[in-house]
Image 1: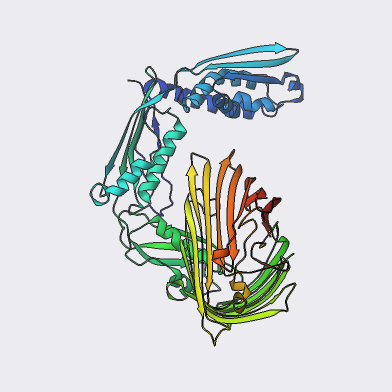
Image 2: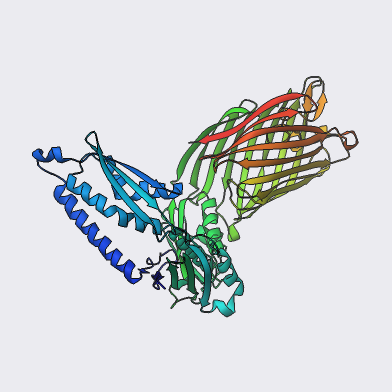
Length: 619
């Protein structure tokens, strides 16, 4: 049976990211002759174009201006030929001689056959017609691609320890192979399926895995493709010590402290990625690259090569943005990363917008064991919204740890808040609050998620004597993403907050209480306009509940539309709660700087329509 077969490739030894040498295609005899002929044509073309590239002036009249019309279906095939067929590519040039033109026309049928073969068409009929109209040559290329070759069998086999050590990894490799029986055969699909499966096999334990043999046997008579791949897992790799380069300003111990990988741990690309993100989450490194040796002769305690590029000691950052809730804003920060010569970051930051002004200073220590960071901070915030003005001073210490999926924070913060309203004199409240917060991220994409969830929770308390009154505070927020089909998704969001105390809410610092309304709360209502309305001032409350459901339909990768329903309330007395529902629709854009949402929402209780725009630009 006539067909193609692909000879075994030999993977290069060295680093884990090393790319295997390209697989060589073993053509059937007739195809091999065509390949040799095509190589000869290519060499001849290069010589011809070199000789004819700079003809004398008297030869200018022999230039061959021409147009090309390609008749081929489907459209993707025509586009492929228009982009890669030499006759079509050189038609844009005005220095093609008559000899070069004749060569291009002669070479066209074989070029077409080779190009359409990559898309699964192995018996095309090609016809070229050349005509001269008004002194200009017109070339028509007619292509009947014939029947599309379909995959009739797929055989994936394995050799090496994976057969007995890790059947789950073998199953993951099979699952990653994206082609199925009955699918059209294309060269790109075939290469992509093999590479995806090899990548899945190398993702855990078997970083030195390779393709031992692969073959795509094509029968042009029956238009059938039989595929077979043999994967060699190689031995199980374990991870050893770090080999760090690029550290000049900051101690190498920082990298050791945030490294979550223990020597002797089984290799996992997920764990290596976690180490990379841990390093990038520190303020010290502008870029981090990690390579792992993949020599099967040395699989145990293989070193991890970490190359970092450090930030300078001093850095200034700034940004501008706009949101319907808070209007235009400008923000900036200054950071010095070597306070006391001990690599302690000192940061001064601030943000100004139309309703809020914020400033903070913070001094942090180096990350300690397991990546925990201790810091001291102080901040001052003024907020003027819904005819209520809140002045909040906060100072204290905190201990934080950031990982790939989960963040922790323990804090001891002193709050002193003053609240001004329309119909009553200013009031103040203070509290020393031990607090805890926890955030978990489990999404398929950190910036534009389609599946998974993000959950944040925090808790704190205060005792009278160290506060104006005793209270316990809790808050939780969650978002769940469900993919629908290839493009669409459903988003659910819920938010709960409560301050539990026997005294009035005025005895609790206002910045620890709750209000609702706005683009990230209940759309259809003004920002923080849902709360305890007293004489026209909307005061923060003890309890908060909001929820949202949203359906997003994406027309392209970057542009989509959404329809949503929001509902929520903020109240001091749960028995007297009033819910505020809102509905609307909007546009979604996956911009280069992050997601941009444009919404139009109707607040059912207030019978009002409000637009919402959230975007940001950093510099």
